[in-house]
Amino acid sequence: MPRETVLVVDDDEATRQACRAALETARFRVAEAADLPAAARAIDHLKAASTACDLALVDYLMPEQNGFNVFHHLRRAQPDLAGILLTGHTSLNVAVEALNRSFSQVIPKPIEPRNLLEAVEAALAERRTVLENARLRALTRLYDALDRLASVTAIDGLYQCIVRLAVEEISADSASLMLLDERRMHLYVASAHGHAPPPVGGGKHFYGEPICGWVLRHGVALELAPGKPLPAAVRAAMHRPEVSAAVCLPLCPGGRPLGVLNINRYGGGGGFLPGDLEVATVLASDAALTIQRLVLLEERRRRERAATVGRLASTIIHDRRPRRRWTGSSSGWANWTACASSS
Image (cartoon, rainbow, N blue to C red; front, side, top):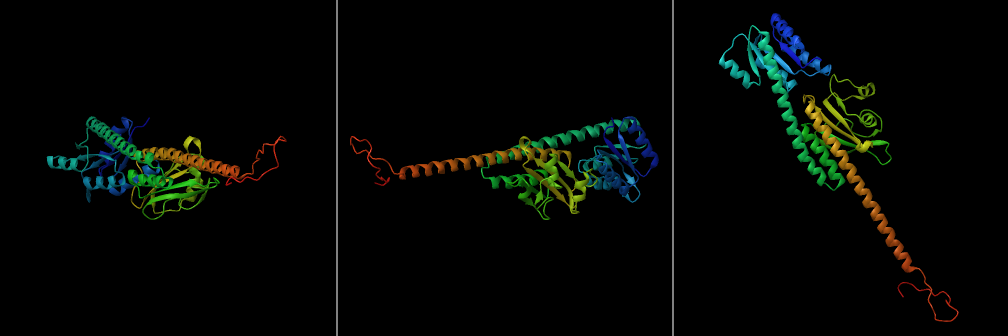
């Protein structure tokens, strides 16, 4: 099975070919680029194929640019990208600057395959550790925040808390919570948080209609981003060019369709990382259970209020009903005598 994907950015074709040969021998996926525009296109192409670029090998000196600028632009498109600097001009100043620019290591040219593979393995192991630590920190922070949901007793306050957490914990621009109406035919926006433009899926949708209705009908999360494979019906419904990435998650506690949670990024906000999607999934799952709990509590309160009103009405009617009065005669009960409860 192929391993992580490595992008080799170098204007020298011989260096690119040497790196490719060594990396493919170790079963890494490899992409090549001779300059920054080609490197940016390579990353976009990988995204379109639903494949993340994990590591970039970047030459220090290239025509009209240097490796520091190239790596900076690539990390703007993919913040979790690891990097190794390739250089034929090794110096202490270059090495220090490379580490300050988030490169893991510096490899001297000409490339020696064994040194290259050792550096790549170390850089990817470091990246995996960083991502796992970030994931655990995000989940820990989220679980602490979810305690707020458990303490909310008002249903409207709960809705507002859910969308606010979605924006804050996933660094999104907006979020909306859409729920099924009482007839279970339409999805409506119960709460929204964030900046304009309005969130994907805003307004009212038939249950089963793209995009939000499709997600709820099928019970699967849907990530909307350039190049992501999407169902034909969903892709045809996408008409929001300002949305750079969005995720729509079903709320189905116990398999019962309840609604969806939409989380959106606009403009150049970039796509969602795997850790973001995991946090969003945990939030949606906990939110669904909490909403269900409050809805059931509210239904029980309504039933108890209705039962209390019914018992009170029955008592009042009983107290105002005419009663027989015993006269003490030998014939038993006398004629009916109206006895109001006030007498």
